[in-house]
Every structure is written in C-alpha cells, then in structure tokens.
Length: 139
Image (cartoon, rainbow, N blue to C red):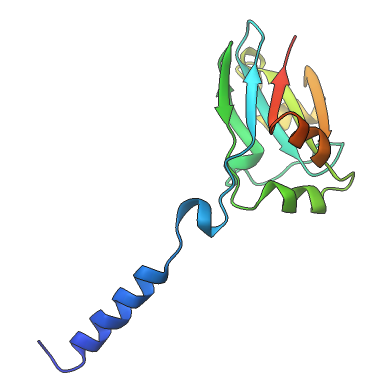
C-alpha cells in the first residue's frame, strides 16, 4: 500500500461507523394514509391550508397513488413534528384527488390550480398522535 492509504482507510472506517443512516439520520416513517374508499387516490401534502405549487423532487408532498382499501406510509426527510412547527396553521394539511382525474390533466399542478381536490384533511400534532399518525380517507 502507498504511504497514507492505510490512514485514509482508517478515517473512512471511522466515518462510516459513525454514519447514521435511515431513520436515525432524520427519516420519519410514522405517518400513514389509509384509503377506505373504492377508488385510487392521490395525496398532496401542504404547509398551508391553501395548497401551493412546489417542486415535486420531494416525494413527501406528492404520492403517486394509494389504492382502495390500502395503507401507505409517507416518508419524510424531516421529522413530521418539525413540519408541523413550520406549518402556517400548525397542522399537516392533506389534499386528496381522484387518481382518474390526473389522467385528464397534464399535472397535479393543474389539479391544484383548478381546485379539483375531492377532500381536504388538516390535523394538529395532538390529533395525529391520538390517531397514531394514521390519516384516514373516506369518501
């Protein structure tokens, strides 16, 4: 080995052994959406009681599809408590859309612009904790 290579490997080992990945590094898996309807839905999260257009690189804000009679975990890079703190109304705001309507429009932004959500649910931290972080969508 070249001089310095072993020390670089040792540093890499210490870095990786101290690296916290997954849940420990901030991922929050507590929130779940339960679809108790007969149709597939799309969920959109917002910091405000009025949804805004956002960058959909953060998949927390937009779930492609939640099938009927199913439960889907919604992962967040930040703790949901942190998101509640930064929400304008101190609630998590969820907007639900019929999955079929997305096929008629070019994007979820079009649905938001035309206010085509079928249901809105806003929950405080206390309400989320009382429901064990389960948001139930019913028709």
